[in-house]
Image (cartoon, rainbow, N blue to C red; front, side):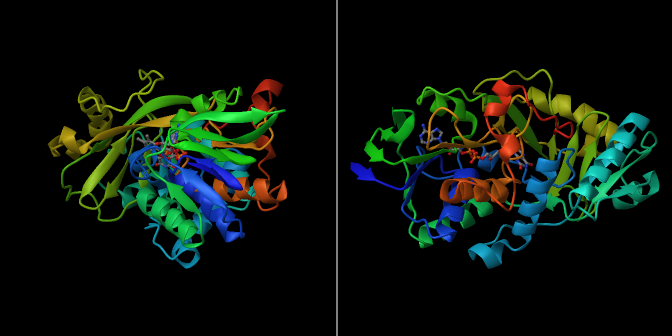
Amino acid sequence: MSETAEVVIIGGGIVGSSVAYNLARQGCTDVVIIEREEKQGLGSTSKSMGGVRAQFATPINIQMSIYSIDFFSRFEEETGHTADYRAHGYLFAATTDAHLNYLRENQEKQRAFGLDNAVMVTRDEIVEMIPQLMADDIIGGSYCPTDGFVDPNSVLTGFSRSARERGVRLQLDTEVTGLSVEDGAIRGVKTNKGEIAANKVVNAAGPWAAGLAGMAGARLPVTPLRRQIVKTQRCDFLPAKFPMLIDMSTGFHFRREGDAILMAWPDDEETPGFKTAFTPEFIEKILIHAVNRVPQFADLGVNPHQCWAGMYEVSPDHHAIIGQDPGVRGLFYANGFSGHGVMHSPASGRIVADLILHGRCDVLDATPLGVERFAEGRLLEETAVL
Ligand SMILES: Cc1cc2nc3c(=O)[nH]c(=O)nc-3n(C[C@H](O)[C@H](O)[C@H](O)COP(=O)(O)OP(=O)(O)OC[C@H]3O[C@@H](n4cnc5c(N)ncnc54)[C@H](O)[C@@H]3O)c2cc1C
């Protein structure tokens, strides 16, 4: 195989697929997505909890979420496929004044950047939404009704099919093994099935992104970090519809998925690395926090075979890295989403496509997300990390 393309996208996950869709929508269809697996979504995308929220602490994350959630609400109209967007809300529950003040301050920022429906809520209002909560220590919280969930695989499929319907090519079972760089500019990709010449290459390789950048001699600070999800057996005692509940005292969060409950918790004993095996001991660890918050969780069965693990692709300041490499012209990053790659996929695809086609994005100014911020010491601080 020896071919050419205007743009090569490395990685057929939700982010690479969104970049492809956004390019094709603007008429750029000489695009190839290279995915090493035999089907799309086997990286982080299918491991996601599918949460989408605009309740963030920094302008860029708030703006990317507003753009993306609006897009999810029109996804079918835009792509012809469902995103399964469920606006069930996100509910942050605070047990300390410090956390409550933090939520209040965040809401001011959220309002300033265009989110007008996030509200502070009292303990009684929280208990009204989820009566089974042990709420003695909860002093209030924040709630946004347009936060909620999507189905990550459906979103990926929607972006990818719609891009391919417009002419984008998808090469499965093909691994990128090298990048060609000449005179500080990208010239193409080498794969285990041949070479593709291209002057624009997008790194959308999720947790593997740093290795891909390294093939061009570039440094991309993205680290894989395992995160585990516990899925319970059928749960009848919680409401059929309730928001994602985030217990700020521990970071434990849970939501309904069909008959079952999905639970997650950031285990600070986890260490970076390419680890994707689910560890059954995690169930015991998470259930301590789960039962403290909802005592009836003690009676709920958990089958370890229905639980799973995947990898966050973490950047040093927990913000995405988006934009062109300063030292390799034509190499674009859509990486480092630090646990928000599904919810921000519409915005990141749009930004990268606009940067490629127009040299700038007028809809969302992603300048703060450039990789050069690390060398220049301009890190962003997002404290609302899950
Ligand atoms: C447990 C868990 C829960 C999460 N929950 C949420 C959530 O609630 N909300 C949210 O927004 N995000 C969540 N995330 C994060 C989200 O899943 C990721 O940010 C997102 O899926 C990243 O998408 P991606 O397309 O960049 O990466 P991926 O889906 O990993 O896609 C990258 C692709 O690149 C391919 N690839 C890599 N190297 C090569 C190569 N050399 N050649 C060819 N192909 C290659 C891989 O095979 C892979 O398919 C969660 C993640 C985990 C693990």
